[in-house]
Length: 320
Image (cartoon, rainbow, N blue to C red; front, top):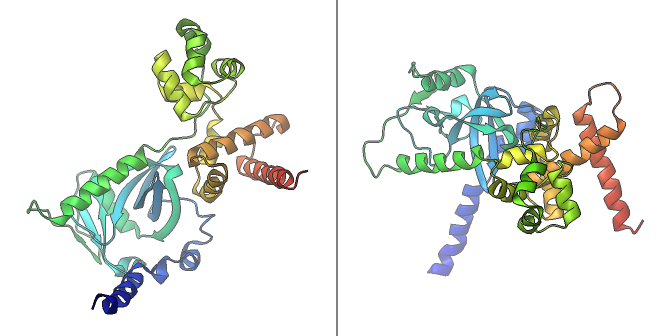
């Protein structure tokens, strides 16, 4: 009996996991252009990803190196009184989805990985107004969510899960940027004692000397060790030890580069943010040697560094 049912169950499961045609790479390309070239913009729905969390979000507005976003849930949708349920007539998604305006938050641009859809301005405006405390009539093809009155309502669990995922996305690290010498690591290390710093970091003395002089970038883990030892914030230490120009950091965090950083991370066995920072440091070093008076075109410079890195890697693999 079980063996007769198993193939049919597997078939139904496989069918349920098929990517809808509207969400395939080809379909997205037809609607939005090359997925690797799409620039984030208000009204777009993106897949945001970081640290094993993946979440659909509606982009509301840019906030520096962050985006204000509304989480979007799909099967189960869930709902509350501050959410907007959007029918398939208004999107390219094949089912009704929920935009949780009450959970609007800010996440780093670097967490955006793939553009999925582009929603009408009236949906985006409804979410923004709701966030501001003004509830308007839902746009055509949508309805306002109903409050959960039963403690066992599944919407409560959906909302809690979304909140947890947004917290992970919001905590994704930014590329450290250059800053005024807010942290004098050399003096702080002298106060703590250089041997103590060497022991805490577990690195050779010459390497530690470069770090405390601000000439070598530290990892997030090393910054946290130094922060605990020296009494500074980890972000301050990262910015002091080899932070990158702000405009380069912005470019490194653009979605167009995410597949590249992930590929480098897999090859080196490191995290995505470490791979991204490695590329940024290499790009900045190359630009420092080459830059004349004009402001660097960081997008082109990153491409040059990647091309040079691929050449070096290929040569090493062939023993050149």
